[in-house]
Amino acid sequence: MQTPHTHTTALIFGGSQGLGLAIAEQMRDEGCTRMVIVGRDQAKGEAAATRLGAHFLACDLADVAQVTACVDRAAERMGSITALCLSAASTERGSILDTTPADFDRMFAINTKGPFFAIQRVAQLARAAGHPASIVTILSMSAHVGQSFLAPYAASKAALSNITKNTANALRHDRIRANGINCGWMDTPGEDAIQRGFHNAPADWLAQAEAAQPFGMLVKPLHVAGLASFMLGPQSGVMTGAIVDFDQNVSGASPE
Image (cartoon, rainbow, N blue to C red; front, side, top):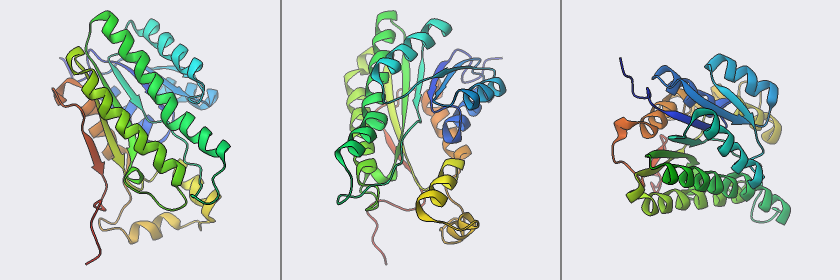
């Protein structure tokens, strides 16, 4: 019996942890048997790949040469790449007042430049082989404005949002689709480390944060994973160029 991802060959950057891992698990559960996940931590990546029945490649998203080589190795291993998910990102803090040029360049290298060239290479291979492909970029509600301490991060995600839409427009006639998800505040191990490391949050910060949310929870990776898997699969049909806000706080809304 065919499932949504029976014929999918998936490459997932950031697939060894957090949201990226949740997306990989969702796609596996929906029939994807050919998958390569990418991350920086070899041990963590190999453990995740074993759980998924996937293959792991180590890669620094800030290094374009590594990114291109990673895409080529994944395509060689699977025979093609029909689904690309870009979930890896840096969330280092910095405001308009204290961000250094080095901080800015590093943020854009990881969050914007690396993804740009991953998309480029996947698109080049898909066009050359003449098969469709689907791309999903994991963005952020911060792309709309962002908090003051997320200035370079917000800018990098806003740029990637534009890249996503530009890609969708440019590659429509090659049957290559590109969509993005603006994620809101999410409950992940990485967020826990950020809260403790950057904001001196107490042990019960998650409970406190969730109690203040309209739906009594932060965004959960499993919820976003379902949408990402849908976007990456054939069930989303001709959907392209969409940037979906996945949050309980509505962009542009003002206090009553």
